[in-house]
Each structure stands twice: as structure tokens, then as C-alpha cells.
Length: 56
Image 1 (tube, rainbow, N blue to C red):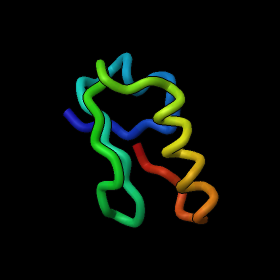
Image 2 (spheres, helix red, strand yellow):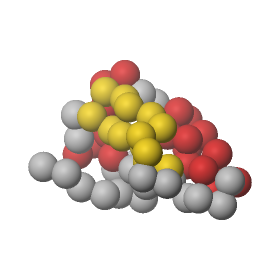
Image 3 (spheres, rainbow, N blue to C red):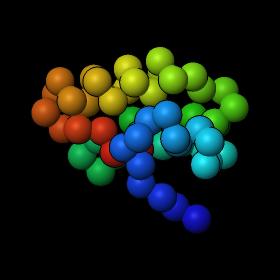
């Protein structure tokens, strides 16, 4: 199953794997049990600054 979430805190709860996309390209690939909230927020914030917006 594939889902799109912008609620970063929910992503690890409902997935085994988290991908970060930017302009249709994978920019991050995490196992949910090996990522923390600060990693995900940093990814999202970096993409917001570039004007692209993160899609996780």
C-alpha cells in the first residue's frame, strides 16, 4: 500500500518505509524503525526552503 502524508508524526506509525520526494525524485528512503521525527522534519523543512515542498 502507498499513502501520502504531510503529517510527519504519523508517517512512522503507519508505515514500514518512508520515502521523501522532491520534484518527482526520491531524496530520502528510511525504514520507519530507523528514523526519528527530527530527521523527517529536517527533510520537510529543506524542501520547503527550496520552494518544492516535501512529499512523504
